Length: 374
Image 1 (cartoon, rainbow, N blue to C red):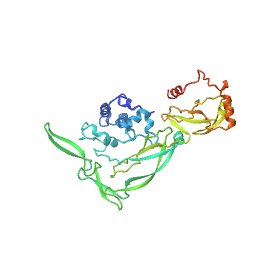
Image 2 (image 1 turned 30 degrees about the vertical axis):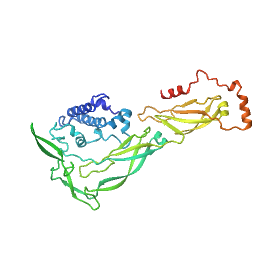
Image 3 (image 1 turned 60 degrees about the vertical axis):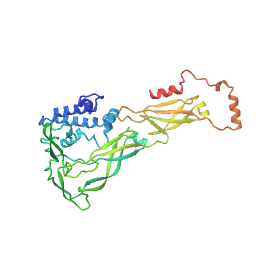
Image 4 (image 1 turned 90 degrees about the vertical axis):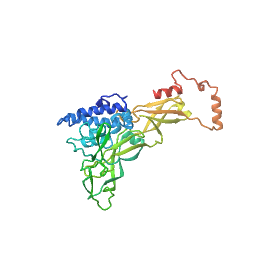
């Protein structure tokens, strides 16, 4: 079971962006590999802190994590793309900017992990996947075609002459406090530390070509409309032999069901019955996400009655169980009557058995609505 991100950084859910950044900096300094050489536990804690910071420092990711926990980022290719699933170079390139020269890296991390060279990550791609209610309830694996930039076959790269492969150049600025030295990304290679040496035919100025790939996306049961999943490493590649691919961001779109309406983990179904059926009782077949089921309506059932079918709703994405199917009974009133029917109902107007006489146990419409949302 994955550890809570707030617990990893030692902060509360109400922590501000500045407090989150400060907590991460403290943990990263404590567990940095340069300070703990050969300590596998410290290295793992360093990665976990980076993973936690990646999610909690992004307002959108933080909101999803607060609502759905770890499940909001899992199930579509495995993982967050954060610290727990990145090597040291990835962490250094993504988070090194908040540490300045804390470890002598001139603005980034140095030591024995990449020699200060930045690993360039390709850009992310975004697609939308439409899902039926049945697919959401059961979970599904989708195969989609994605056009992504990849390095052309035969392309070669050489060490950047401007930064000598470090991906950074030093800039000296005169200030009232003296000469200040800072590191900035190399403008010649974009921080990759490499430049294209051989350009194959058909490649662009960076040695890239456009390629269509088929990507398999495992979508867990219980996703909601608008949720985003991530397939790590299936975005655009970046130039350079030391680069890593971006990610594929998958936005979920839920298709409307013909009969069922979703409300969180619960489903709603409108069942219409006639006067005779309501008065005499009837067996009715209704639609569920797992097929049709037959239910029995007692004689004298009232319009507005709600029948609850346990476990026939949508599974919780956090594995907290499955919602219910709420069947709303509606007694259908015919709009036109023939002469014989009119005569029958005219006689029934004065019949005491047809006079409305709700019992105290019969809840009002507003009470039923209140119960549904409580």
